[in-house]
View 1 (cartoon, rainbow, N blue to C red):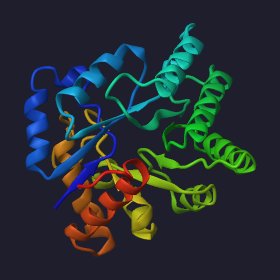
View 2 (tube, rainbow, N blue to C red; view 1 turned 90 degrees about the vertical axis):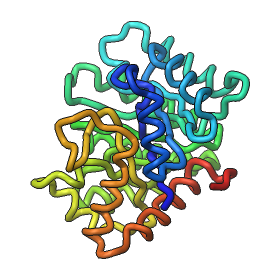
View 3 (tube, rainbow, N blue to C red; view 1 turned 135 degrees about the vertical axis):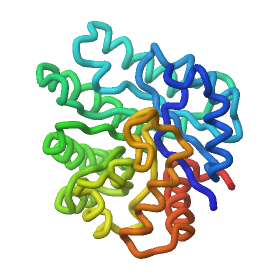
View 4 (cartoon, rainbow, N blue to C red; view 1 turned 135 degrees about the horizontal axis):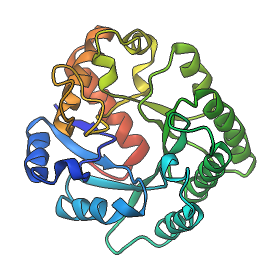
Length: 272
C-alpha cells in the first residue's frame, strides 16, 4: 500500500528532536511522498533543507500563508520573494505547487483586503506557470468560494487554468459541489474526518473518491487514535482507513486512488 501525505510540515520545529525518525516511520507506514507547503521566509530554509535531505520522498511548494500577511508590514516583499523563487528556483529544486496560500479570518478580520490581494496574486502566478495551488481556508469559506469562482473564470479567459487542492476541507456537501464548479480541484481530507463528533465523515461519504486526497497537516490536526498528541506523516494511514470505512471500500483501493489523484495533480511526471 502506497500513500502520499499531501500536506506535511515535517520541517517544523516540533520535529527538531526526531525528524529523521518521523521520516522513517512515514516510510514504514507506506508513505512514498511528502508534499511540503511553504509558510513564509522564516521557514524556507528549513523546508528546502528537509527536501534536500530526503530527495526521494519530499517535494516542495512555494507560497505565502494568509496569516503571514495580516500585520506583517513586509508582506508585499514576501510576496515578491515567492514570485522570485517560482520564476528562478534554487538549483535542484522543482516546486510542485504554489502553496500554501488562501484566506484565514479566524484570528482577525482586519486584513481581509490584504489577504485577498496576496491570494489572488499567487493564484495568478500559479496559472501563468501552469502550477496547481494548495489553498488554506479558515473561517472564510464564503469569501473563498467567491474568489475562486471569479478567478477560475478570469483564468479561462486568459487561456489558463486555475486548479489544485482545497487543503483541510471540512465543509458540507453544498460547499463541495459549489467548489467543484470552479474547475479541477481536489479536496484534502485530514485527521478531522476521524473525530467522533465531526460532520466531515458524512460529507466524505457523498464525495467522489476521484476528488479526494489524504493529508496530515502535521504537526496539527492529529487523527484518532493519537488525537491530543503531535501529528506526523505516518498517521495519514488513519485518514485513509476512515475514508475507506465511511465509503464502504477497501483501504487498499482508497490508498491506490487517492495516491493516483495526488500524482496526477502535483507530480504528473513522476513514477512511484
